[in-house]
Image (tube, rainbow, N blue to C red):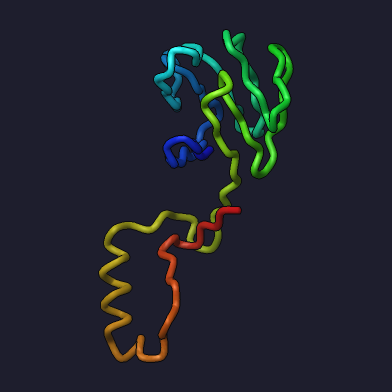
Length: 136
C-alpha cells in the first residue's frame, strides 16, 4: 500500500495488517495520526481483502463506500481512502528471480562493475537494483 499523502510504501507481508491511529497488538500495523482516523480503522488480510472495522468516518475503495461487515477484495491500483482524507494506492509487488531485496552494498558493487572493463558496453542505461522485484 502506498500512502499517497506521504509517498511511503508499506509492504503488506503478514497474514493480517491493521491500519489506524492506534492499532493495538497487531504484529504488522500502519499507524496514522489524523484524529478523524479511527484507532482500529481497517484490516487487510493476506487474501487481499479489506474489512472496515466500524470506523467512525468510514473507508472507501475507488470512491465507493465500504460498509461495515462487507469485505472488499482489493485489486491492482485500487484507491483506498480512510475517513475521506488518507488515500492509499494498493499495488501488487512480485518477487522474481532472486526472491530477495537488494542491499545498500549492491550500489557500490554496480558502480565498480560499470567502471571496470566488464561494463564498457553499458552506456545510457537506467539500472534498477531491485533484485528482480517488479511493481505494477
